[in-house]
Image (cartoon, rainbow, N blue to C red; front, side, top):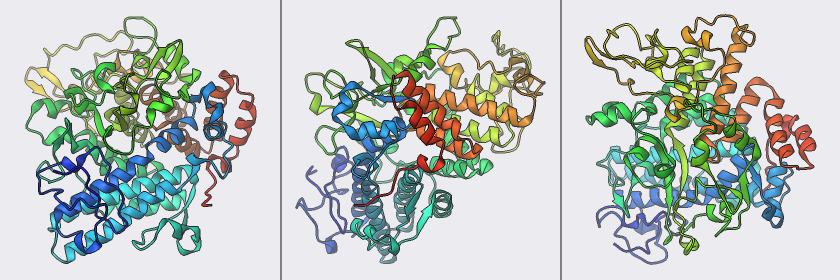
Length: 579
């Protein structure tokens, strides 16, 4: 295999993802190694189609830095360091005072990916019409690239609020200077378009292991490289308020292992299960261990031999990088306020996310594989989706759909414990298996809220969710004390804070969003979480207060001004400027 291969697109760009040029059998990417290929030489067979897919993902990886900066620094979990004084773009993002020259607020990198996707999709249509690709091969690849395009548009909508929607395969990035050529959609309209397009894609599942894109190269299996379409649709429906549809798609992700004959996968994969701790040591190293495989859904690795290079070293490292961004005092305080089951302080997820180096707090999630002697050869990963993210999003949808006990179970101690009448979330007694569990330890609800967590020996039975421990149960921190007696049987007894149904919904939702901060800090979810809830509740303070707290704790003199600015919804979105 030659490593200097290039993606066969109409507008050819370097092939850059990980070195997947060595991805599969020699035939897969055995194309000419010139710096460019004539269009007539491309899109001739499924291996050319594979090269096109990989090329799109190579281009997509250029968004990693922009994605993390926009989705975390705009929120309350990430802050600038003193070193960022030389980087006004980051300070602008942090202070919500973006001008036209800010590189992180540039929509063009997103549209470069979109234009490439449009080109590939059009050529896939042509290939299948000319019998150069079988229908099943077409369905898998077209759906993958189409879903990736929807994801990129979804990010644009979150940050800019109102964006041109371009599907024309002949359009170039420069064409967007004249926005009159394309429909400009508000976020809510954009969500409708994306849902309609993505729901209609012909193939919803991950690539089958038999697909030519599935292989192991340089120690990485490619299964996790590609977008999960059910997860994307879950997010789109969640933003639209289609809670049953969102939960249905999330449930499809959570039950990925149910078709696996390997019982370890059947009971463990994506179920936040006991026996599969997600630890600092093997969590964010990118090494594809068993525990990593049961947690990560979408994870793209960087490689020293290929562009783009790992952008997170300069952003976060204070010994081999520029150390421009750091954990906020707000999130550190949140972790410090947690108590473990053994009554010791500090949420252990703090140690999975942060390390003090030379007395300074460092975002360590992205730096586990860095060799200080060879910092410019840094490997690393862009962590896009984990099982815990899907569980929290499912819980959010379930709570809004009136399924509060299911939401509570996934957030706290899991299905089996929560639906066992002997369980007490305060004392947390051990659950004996020497009993008949026929009518307990399961939700007895209709799909997608039907969970079976039964584990009993009289008769012997193991439900597919019996290993589920809940987000907080897995990490070993105390159950959320909203009103434990009310949640014990969830007849929803009256309590000062839970006097009505709406109060219950918002209170559980608050706990879910704060749990997402503890669990998913710095992974690119915080701004969307705050924005989604603020829009849903029509409550600017939900977002503004958290950003204010971050800035105020950091001694930022702009804290009050930023809060006032964010109380106006128009200021939640970046200006869409092309020049």
